[in-house]
Image (tube, rainbow, N blue to C red; front, side, top):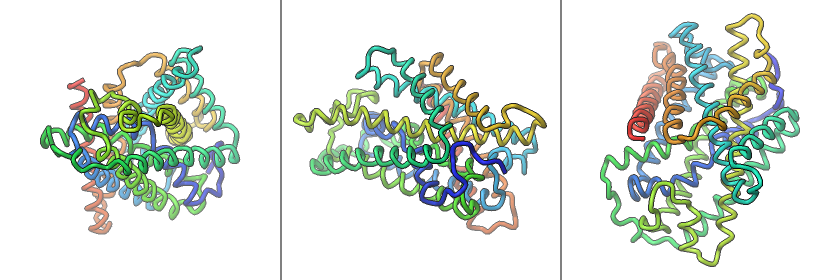
Length: 391
């Protein structure tokens, strides 16, 4: 198989997991506390447990499928087993289009933060600059990717750990009362805010040909990514809920830094720190997902078209980056578009999981996990539909 132009063929479990974490841990973690408080109150933590279980089942199912049917074009290869060539193409393109839109929006969000400190460019143009720069970084080869992934995950995790520790020092269980001011509906509504923080683990099997001993490494890296992400998110969010009263969040868009300054008035550096943490986490997600989505796209094109310029990883990367830039320039309605992204991604996830459920030779455990994973994708899809109609 052709090597990915941006990775190394000796990538082990640790680096594959780091790439997965950079793809998963994004700016959403900083926006979740406000969304949880306004949608569900402290009971929003229950939404986290639901999402972690659902995503873990999806990840376990995809890891199992990657062991049985190794492929870089995971959505095409796995979906066509039961839905044929057309089904595989639909699954792949729904994923690629959804993620391309998401990448453009993430670039635009990062641009908004960059323009606060570097106002000589409009936020949209900063988003374009960021996407272009990260695309160029993807062309630097194995050394650039390895070093950049390690730096990005360190710069992402350290601020999260620091803020978690600070908020833990101000923990007050009285902030958990009332626990569920919006009832069960609030817990359900909060799933929409939580689930976006977990997309991205599929970046790992997408780089199958670049990973050492992939049939063993890919499943382990996927599971580690989801588990580590779940622990980090739960710790961070729990600390937020214990330290920050619901009254500090006027709406789901209230900046976390604004609420933190009320509790830590002498720590104005938190504002700058959090803002740049958001930029860094978005950059990490963009970098990892540009590699992953372009790899999935090029690998699928090789299977469905005899000769195409986009069977090259480099050309596919340029196409995906161009699409992301166009999305950054065109779209503004983030909530509705992320709901649409959720629908596209869950369609691809479901398509790749179904064969595991239909395989009568598979163990009862994995068939049950596949069923739970499909239930998770259905729940996420419903939340996406609700988000579209409510927006």
